[in-house]
Image 1: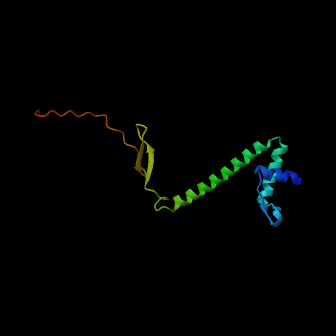
Image 2: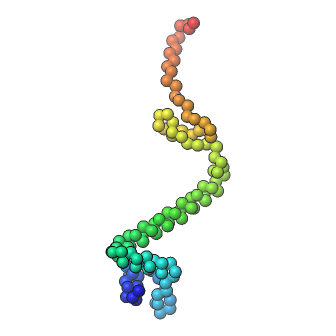
Image 3: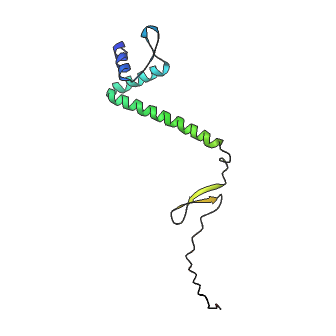
Length: 122
């Protein structure tokens, strides 16, 4: 790549290499991979603004994947989480109910009991 192209990408924030003494740019292996991706996208006709958006989205995906791993590790570290004795299910009315493992939601009774004081039932 032409040095002017590298400077432009640096100014646009597409790649931010580290600096050595004398403000010389030092590109890491990750920077080189990013530059190759920029070049590939540019040759495919994607604008620099489109490339920036793609790179931002890829960074967001990476951050979210890392967060998922952190949360999964945190969840696994909780006591009893691996063999939790309760599960969640949809109740008959569409609500969420907590059940012991192996149970099914019980239907709500539709029976009506009428009690009248003073009357005996036979």
